[in-house]
Length: 464
Image 1 (tube, rainbow, N blue to C red):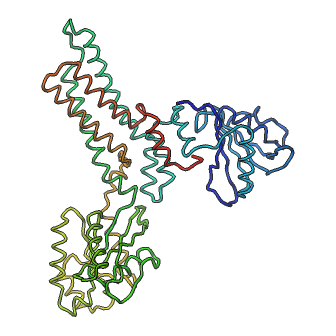
Image 2 (cartoon, one colour):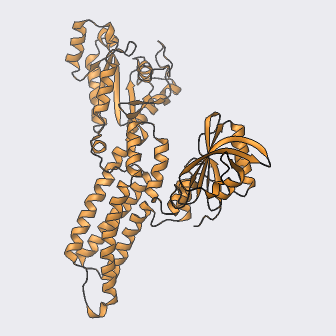
Image 3 (spheres, rainbow, N blue to C red):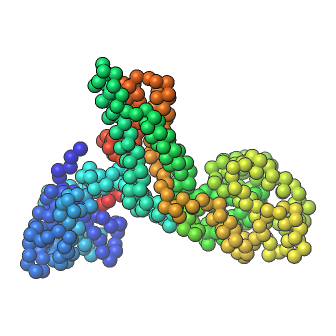
């Protein structure tokens, strides 16, 4: 796939602002920009060295459009590996479009989504996993998702995969060589060393595959389901956590009939809180559907908050039945962290507080309405998040495409080991190794096709 034309796009968000950046890339980028740019110093833009900034005016047919700064990046020392010019103009949408239209009239075309980064990949400035990390970096909205994207963009994941692929490729070459001397029955590849390599590759692949569970939630936000009986303060707690009136709050039981979701960053980690319909026996069809959704959201959640109305529970003598309900949820979802939260603690006496914690030892006393204990609750949520690998700068997989390729590579490595253990012929062993190499190459882009690249870069913003 070759890109011989010159592209242009707005590299900053659309709309009015103080400054906007219009980016050109391609063989005629500097020539096109030079034909429109008139430096205040009188120097020709095309004659200036790379990585320099120049003040001047954009003019078309002697019509002044704007005063701009033009920054030159000559190939191969640019983001795309091609000649690149960035025009920093005033942020008027009218000015932006006037400059872009003038550039188009000079022979450039509008860039497609992600095309600048696609050209960077095609020109060897980054591999495919690093290119995908660019989109993740732009989309990052928490410290954790930002750190994951930065780590991948620096090539930590790529280098680990490339090293394994190269070692496997070396052995594949030796086995292919054996096929050329099949009549002499010569063995070039030491089978014991090969078995040790397969063991090491398997260990690394399993570690990377296991890291996806952590990486996926850190990247996309940790889903937390707030469940409990109707009218216990679930919507009030959601509003308190979000610090806004996101959910409708009323004294009428069953007000929330569908799930309400919103996101917040706590301690650098993104959380997606889900306010669910109250769990109770009901003849109301709509409310019943909401309760069914509640259990679906529990299935999807990483953490569950069970909220109880402590005042009502004490008045009705229902602490033991609530403790039994909590036990059922634990038994039904044994792998999910469960936080039992006793709401309306501001209305309790010291004796009543002690009674609650005696009957339900794991209960955390809070007042969702007044914010009491909410800070301790958020600290407890952070304790459930495994950020050790992130803090230790370990490679963490966050991309579903990478995860799928790793699973397929592991399956092929197991097939190779089985062939090695059963003594299959070198030609069949070579086929299995090539298949494993294929899945390694899918991750970094050594193996790619137009359809794969189109799917990946279609998710980028235009201008990047």
